[in-house]
Image (cartoon, rainbow, N blue to C red; front, side):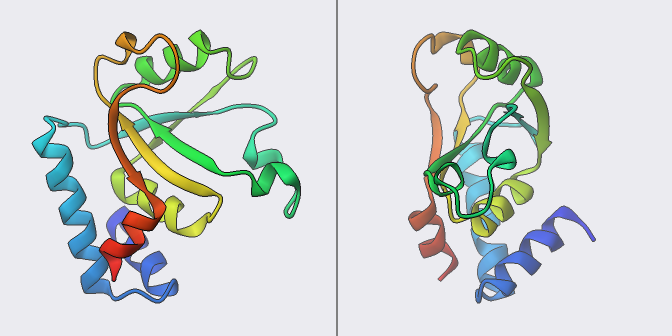
Length: 142
């Protein structure tokens, strides 16, 4: 199953139509293209002791999360290291369709942020970029 088809299956399982899922994916690709983003793969990081290691129902698993992605692996790891996010952050590569499927599947993820390049400009806090709030995404699917 392709990444696109997987996203559409996740959207359908959440009660949205395949047509709405396709339209939302196309709209987000267009928004990224308008910002000059050419990447088809985005990179994030998973830190030890993060949400993936939390027990279901625990405070850590219920805390709002941000899915922060970068256009290059170097930018993702550099951000994690500069901000000391774990001892050894693990790189994760995702397509836009995979990131959107994660946003749908995991209610604790409240937003997706695809950082602008070069990410080095953001020394403190979150880098600038395309931010998609979960609620905004759900509205796109309706």
